[in-house]
Amino acid sequence: MKTFLVAVVVVSLFAGAAAAAVAYSFVLGETEARYQKLLDDMRAENLELQSRLSEAENTVNRLRSDLSSLQTSLQTAENRAQQFSERINLLENRLNQLSSQLEAANTELKNLRSSMESIKNVMALLENDRVLISWLRSEPPGTREGDREYWNETRALAVKSDPNLVLTVDKILDNLDLYYDWVEQFPQLTDVTRDELIRWCPLYIDWLLNAPPGVEEYNNAVNQLREEILLTVIAHIDSLSRVLEG
Image (cartoon, rainbow, N blue to C red):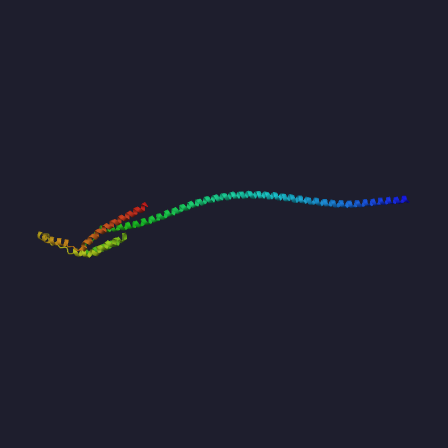
């Protein structure tokens, strides 16, 4: 009986051990399957991470390449900007030079136009002087009204050369009637005989010495006008010389 119990116990222990072994094997297999699955998942995740890491490295490399290209482009752009800046400075300097030259040319042109206008004005005055002198070369007609017309025409020509000449011409016109009143009182010589000459000489001397003041003023004004016209012509020639020298 005791042996039987021992046997039962042994069998029970063996059966328990076998069951435990089976259970352990089952648990171990399940654990191993889980571990394998976990390991496979980790390997897959690792592969994915490696793929992402490789992709990230490629992206970083591309970014580095792009950054290097960008830096190169930026440096090139800076160099070109520097070149453009230098060219702009050169163009600005050239523009300033051209502007100065243009301003100088405009000033010179303005001065030239002013000189040409001055020359034109002086030449017009000299032409008026020429016409006036040519007119004065013809003597007055020698009659009261003829001389009046002569000096009025002289006045019209003189005002074109120099308005101040008109004052002297007016003196001539103011004394013209007094002058011809005296001229018309000239003692006439009716004959050239000795007795007639003896009679005429005192009359002539008296007529000559008793000329009214207007006669002398008339003659002085005529001489003064000729001198003033000569001085006016000289002044106009000097003006032309100064303009040409300037």
